[in-house]
Length: 176
Image (cartoon, rainbow, N blue to C red; front, side):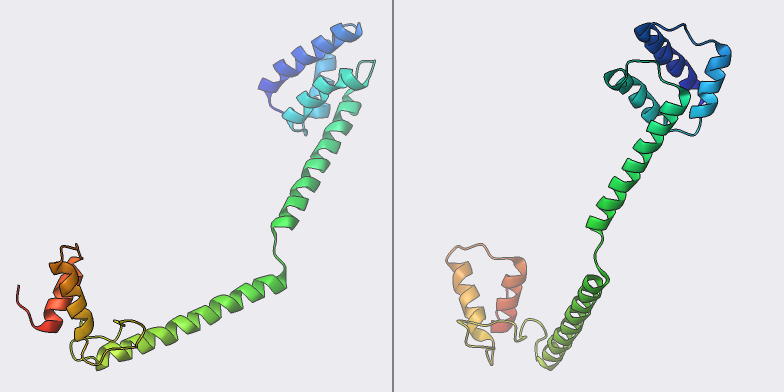
């Protein structure tokens, strides 16, 4: 608690004194309350003081409020630990995930090497590369079938990308 909390604490304790019909807490009593509750979370102190009349029929002591604040703190820590346990993954699961990432990386590197070899072996680079398959037949030897299809699509009014336009024209040797 800080000194700004003391005014709120004093007001809340005055309300409790009025509710339970006890005499108001003096300056010396407030010093004891402040010292006793100085290590507590102020929100917990206010919650316990607000909740007190629902559970008791007498004015609380600083020790009773301190004990209840400690209980609330313990419960909060236990709840947080339980949430952390639910979110944490087991060592086996972490190792499995790492292995999967590693396998995926190996597959990606292998596929990248294959693509690089295909592009390097290709006469016209990517334009004549073997990534264009028609009807699931596999790579075309001269790569003109896909270029002819793109030409027909464009000439029929379909909008195709600039890259596709350049690719079919280069494959068929057509100037703009």
